[in-house]
Image (cartoon, rainbow, N blue to C red):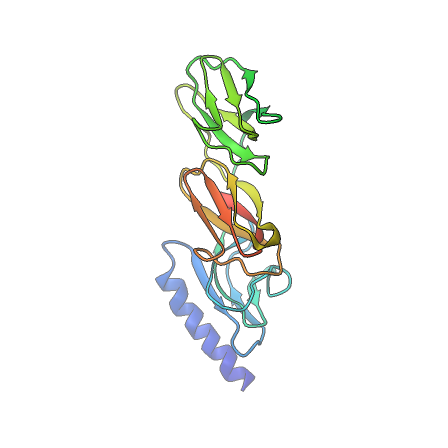
Length: 222
């Protein structure tokens, strides 16, 4: 029986690898709570990009990575993507914080360079032109916004690369974690016992990530 299951998995993976080659996504499923191994490139790391099961998919508990691929167990079913090798990205950043709801001006030489929110540090939201913005040679923050802001190059904009953002739903309440998202966000590592399912307990938009229903996780942002 084990041999038949292994053969079926190998045949399915051969089909899935062909069908998903363009996006580099591998689907791995634990049926009947059994541990299943799915081969894929893990040299640069692996991200869980979409949970498909009602059962939790928590790293090192319900799924993990070894030198030959990814494994799932306890009914976890999900899609995984291998990370591409990336160069170290140098970023120019400044931290600006509004205390007691007051407006704070943080002087910085911009000379027309673009600015974006890199990471929200406060529980209160950081929204452009509402609780933070840019002046001639300043970044300002108000209404309790505290954040790290990235200053790009006037000609080439911002360097490419991914960054990790941690977002937590405390007391099962919805929370927004501000960061500028140009291309998308994926679940990198679930940290909570509660499920993090895209569209149900987490999601993203141009101004950041939201979590709900007790989801706490690290998200990879591009």
